[in-house]
Image (cartoon, rainbow, N blue to C red):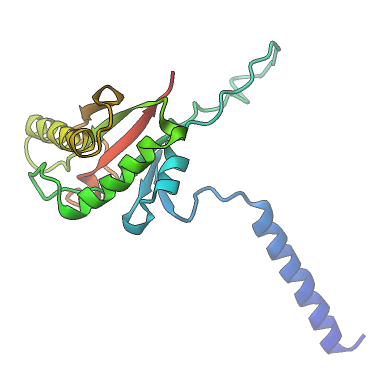
Length: 196
């Protein structure tokens, strides 16, 4: 076998292995989202009705069967599943709960998703967040006002039933960007689907 055909076949085998590895590895995060910890974050142009439906639709209920599974020292125990949720980088100016025009545009898309038949039977928690600058009690109140601003906009502008949306302030406890506490993504809104 000459050197050229040996290199050529080696390259084909190597490329095949790389391709097989990539195809076998599951995509942990869709290209339209970024997972930070347990939170799926939708940004800018990626806040689409389709992406929101995918993020907010709970997975199907698992089929429950009777069985006995023996494991040693907790081996094989799986972590609880993450709730269907989407953190939207609907950010706020420092010390403000007023919706910006870009925030309203993103919420218009959220309203379309909430009106979709796939989500019609669900209610949602609208969670407001604050960055850790300032007093923790003031940040808790500010995050509550942010959640209420989003809820009120969806209810009054888009006629989403008020009983489907519960506003909840989370204060400054769930930072997405711990390296930069004042980062805009720490002043955000998360929408969590309530399952029955």
